[in-house]
Image (tube, rainbow over all chains, first blue to last red; front, side, top):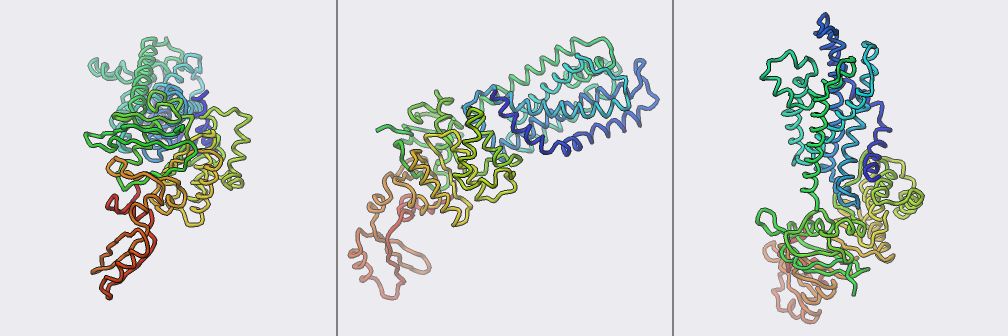
Amino acid sequence: MDAYAILWSDLMMLKRRWSRYLLTTLISPILYLMAFGLGLGRGISINGTTYLEFVVPGIIALTAMTSSFNGAGLRLNTDRIYFKSFDECLMAPISLLSLLLGKAMIGVVRGLVSSAAFLAVAMLMVPMLQVTPFFMISLLLTCLTFAFLGVLAALLARTHDDMATFSSLILLPMTFLGATFFSVNQVPSQLKIVLYALPLTHSSTCLRAAALNQPFPYPSFVLLIFFLLLFSAGSLVALRRISI
Amino acid sequence: MPYMVEISGLTKEYSGIRVVDGLDLQVAAGELFGFLGPNGAGKTTTIRILTTLTKPSSGQAFINGYNVVAEAQRVKSEFGIVQQHISLNRDLTVRENLELHARLHHLPPAERKKRIDYLLEYVDMTEWGSQTIDQISGGMKRKVMIARALIHRPKLLFLDEPTVGLDAQTRRRVWDLIRMMNSEGATIFLTTHYIEEAEALCRRVGIVHHGRLISLGAPVQLRRKLGLITVETEDNGRTHYSYFPDRDAASEFVHRLNSSEKVVMRESNLEDVFVELTGQKVQED
């Protein structure tokens, strides 16, 4: 209930600015779709599917990652360091767990909204994509994982620059290396180890398998849950460190 | 006497530097207390400890009998705070900001609307309820923060520079609100760098310097200790201040001065006390 109170404030904001939010959140994935799916990948097929069919689930994973991370992390960072409105939450009689969950849910909602909006656009071009229960669960898990990563980064950051540095060092490499635009099977085995250490790789793999009706990669699903637990536990430790 | 705020031997160190140094202080329930000090004196750190935002290095602090560290969750329901900076959610409306706070403080849905309506009227902001924070003036934001701090009917209110940056008219309106809140039973813990504000509002003030409480009492008591009459003399563009217990003693001093010196004789004020004790003008912490 307390977590919902935190989320509620963001829902009010989202309600007021939904059209602007959707427009800004769709620009990047649509550009990726045009550049990689319709431009670069035209005529390429991977494991019997067209590159467009292959890349759309990856872009959905990427959209979920970016929107969830930014929705939770950037807002929290600004509230904590610039507006100091996070202090008001810390001074409210709610548990740290509720506070953490509420902040993460803001990212989850934004991630789901952005991904669903992009999916709706992408379905016009790739109608054979399957939105199965596995797809939905993988998407939710992706949003949760990256929302908690955003919260963790925002709680560890001491300045706004720290968040920008985190994005450049972690999110940007993950954007291009997280099995978004290519299959992990195509890369040399030494590089595979690095790619499997990235949570986005597992999000892309799960979403792609579910959307294309391929065998579901349970190890990736379990690893995604592991990343979620790791980031949420890290966030709780970081929050405990900055509060009494 | 029941104390709303009780601090004993409170210390806070940052990287070996003592910002709060063995502070002892009691504020009675229902009191309007002024907490003054120059820049870096430890006022804000003390308030952060009392409001559960910062953990003390040593010592203890209690709000309405609850330990601020061991019983932090309980303490959080006892106080409201108006921070120095505008800590409202800028993308929400005035009413939504109040509702968020009401939700965080577990006000039942039926009571929320009534309480918000009442407080908007209390701070004279009823017609601004549907405006976002970015659409209202600085004075209005301050009034919304006061309304927000009151939403859960706290017994203690921390006001950290509540009138900073406000015009004279709005400042007086905020003063009226502070007096009204106090007359309705709330204990007020006020920090301000406007000395006249502390003098006008507070029944008792404490002056902190280098993290220690160096003076405590009613403004008139502190003035009496210093001298009720101040004589200002100017020498090569520099003003010197001398303090006397009464006008007769001050007049005698003035008569002895060189007649060419520029002299002002006036009643001493809390700022004189502050400057003499701390050696500096009051600044924002």
